[in-house]
Length: 165
Image (cartoon, rainbow, N blue to C red; front, side, top):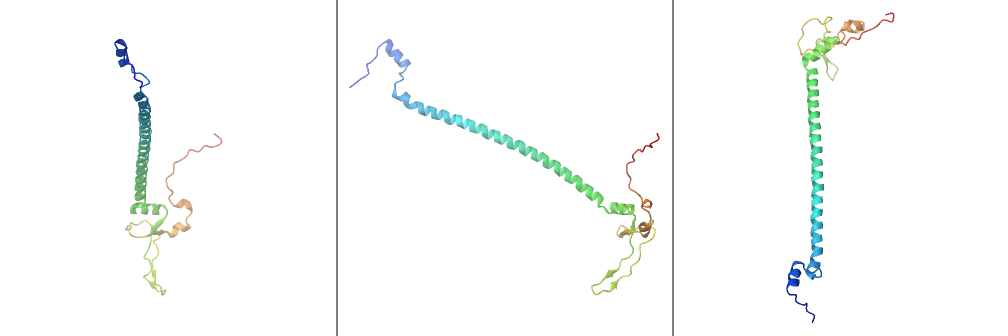
């Protein structure tokens, strides 16, 4: 059948250095090499996208952690303010600023309508020292006194100008 002629000498050396493009081994390897190159390229692009997504998630998590820390600090500051305002001495001071005085002895009503205890009115002057447990009630003179008689909370003063100057 058809046999390839044997090359001798210089032609044989050149043929060994440059194999022919018509060889069947070269043609069969080309799709495989292309497939491997495409898979490697796709894998690299996939890793790049995955790395970018992870970095973006890390930045978002860092921002959320910073926001959480700021909100926690603000919550603790507000809780300290609430605790300071709800302390017994602060409540008593604020009640006195509003014109309240310690109340007298209370009386209680039973379900059948009987009164237990003897009520006593609040003292007319709130100048005496009282215990922290006594409830504060509005003093009778605070009800009839003009609003200027009650101590006003401190407010920043604003300069006033007269029209003639």
